[in-house]
Amino acid sequence: MRLTHVFLPLILLSPCAFGATTICQFDGSGHLPSVVSWDSVTHQAKAEFNTYGTKSGKLTLSRKHGDYGNKVNLVFPPSSPLFGDEFEIIVFPVGRNAFRALGVAYVISDGSKHLSISLGDADAVCNSL
Image (cartoon, rainbow, N blue to C red; front, side, top):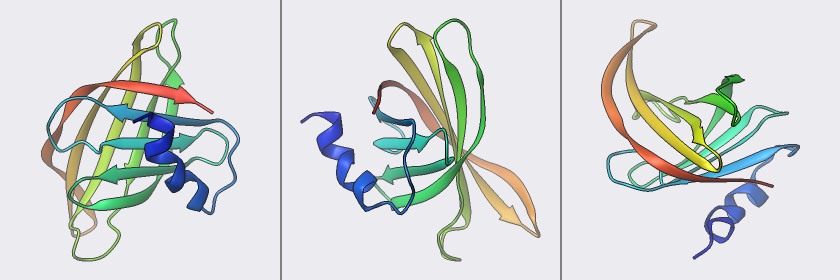
């Protein structure tokens, strides 16, 4: 199944306007989402977690990373008090058309973030629309 077929419904149902949308699908195991997307203009982000479902978030940081593109930080806050964790995914190029991602989860206690677990790291297949 093509990456755009997997994630396109999430993009089409999103309330944000798209300018420069990137979609990444992750290989490997761990607790990383299966797919993330972000818009570099609106800073809207989406992730499809196997355990937590679809979460909306924000692109919080983008900076040049070598000769192949930008490294981005995507933050997905808890969608309800039942989710005590905030997730952060970093996606970065490692070569021409080659990407990696890593993720962590934070516990938020008394207004402070505390590192909770690693969500793992994996190779990613990324495409821009």
